[in-house]
Length: 358
Image (cartoon, rainbow, N blue to C red; front, top):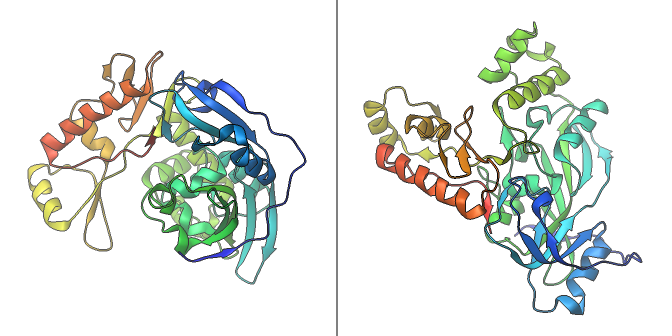
């Protein structure tokens, strides 16, 4: 793993509070009514070290929660839940090609994107309104409307839980993939991300040709084909409008955004599928494979708007599973399994969930 030691973690005089049987309903966007055996709010790296070294948590594994927008909690969490609340954002440096901005892991992602534009720094606008925190963005390698976070990523700072040491990880070390990273695989539950630095190019080129965004811009009198004439703020506003029209607000209807990844299949499998399903929605990949629209597959299996008890598929977006009130994590997983089985039976395609199940 390509990494280098970062500056030492400073001690923090602020005491920590260990909260017993702490309710997590407000800390997961599905709104599942589960509890943590112990929880601790983390506002600094020093508090993080104090929490994991506290003798009262000996033998209890740590579990990191940021915004809780990419997790399905199926039961009470028998762990020390670290509630990441580190704050701060700043421009750290610039070179001939880019400006580098850093945000603490507990910063709200959407608010951070809006802040970069307020500083006159475009580059993240296509990722507006994605729920969650800055610290969660590299774990999931979030992406939307023609942009993935890894394209703007410079480095991150993390604390290794086993040693308490701070490390700086570059893009190679993070091993980014489609909605994937080192932190979802080998690095899972080994590190706590404390800050992320992004590289925003000075020679910025708008990405406004994604169909939904182009339509929204056109409705606002902006021609997406006009290239550099499309302002970053206009793209930001269009993305916000499209997402609000298609996706439910977690504060009103519990959900974790898109529940399934868009599956990628090889050329031969795609050719056979296309022959059977000529209308299949797909996106060609550079290696000859095809990325399928998971929402289309789910919709064609008749799941849009259907429910199993209090867990349901959203009526406007088949990729989104929702808690209509009183659903458990197990209920949502049961619904997800039923959808997966139907898609596999009809299309021969395996769907993979985006959220982490706990």
